[in-house]
Structures are given as structure tokens and as C-alpha cells.
Length: 226
Image (spheres, rainbow, N blue to C red):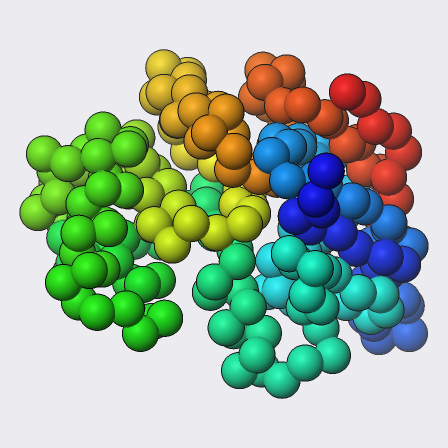
């Protein structure tokens, strides 16, 4: 099976005065195309730092990340931006929608940044909103949407360009249990359709829906469970 995302010898060391904090310590990880993987661990264990490096938001102190067989580090900023824009989708605990834009305008941002024709971008964005059940809310701004609807808009934005991997940081952290279930049902449907997902979560119910659970503690992988 093809590898969607991998890292080798990943370290992240923060210098705080005279002290060095090893947030990520020598992690090797391989995620195959079509997997839905949960990354879990106690607060401060390094799981969000790991996700930030895997997504290219933060640079590692050592090691490499490969996305769709291409290196994420050791390339120019423009090349990394292009790689992230084409191959990766992002879903966050905070929805990061632009308040002055409608739902469909928020969704089409990744396509426009990639230079997509505006008419084609609008068509693809409406299809993405349809996948998450919000085609009838396309002209609503974020303030006119519930928290669950805003998260569904952010999911549509993450999948509109058909990325090879979708990275999620506590995607249900700001939602009630009923809405969380609706969001996870959408993510599971995306996975069943072939999308690769990496989900940082503290919720055991979310982890149970994943094909693999990776436990992290003190910056290291301490266990993996199918």
C-alpha cells in the first residue's frame, strides 16, 4: 500500500534559557494511504508539536517529513507552501473561518490560492459543501452558522482540493457530543471513500473509530494499537 505521510528521526528541541526541552524525540512514523490514525497522549506529551511538524507549520530540529513521497523540509518556502497547498488539508479545533466571507467563499480559498479558475473553484466548493450537508447554507457567513456547521465548513475547505492527507487537531474539541458525532460521521465517510486522516484527540470514542491508535508520551511513541 502506498505511503501517504511519513517521518524519519523527527526531533523538536526548544531552548528555554539554559534548559533544553525535548518536545519530540526521535519519532519514526509511516501512515498508509486510506488509513485513519488517532494520535493520543496526556497534555504536554508532544502530540500537537508532532502534528505541527507533520503539517509543515513548524520546523523540526532534526529529521524529515515526506508527503506523497515528497520531502517537506530542506526545500524553499515557496515549494513547501505549494506542497502543503496541493497535498494537505487541515481541520482545527478552532474553525479559522473568515467572518467577512460566506461559507462557499471560505471553502474556495485553497483553490484560489492554487490559481484555480474562479468559476471552477466555486463549482468545486459547492460540491464540497454538499458532501458535508451544507449546500443550503453556502451564502451564510460564519456568525450565522452553529458551531457544528462552522466545523463542517472547515471540513469542506480541507477537502475541496482533494488532498492526499487531512490533518486534524482536536476537530471536535469545541463541540457538544451530538455535534461531535455528526462531525466524526463525516470524517469516517471521507475515510471510507479513501481519504487519509491523522487526528490528534483526547477522546477515546473518536480513537475507537480509527484504524490505528498511536500513543505518545514524553515526545516518544510508546505504543501502537490496531
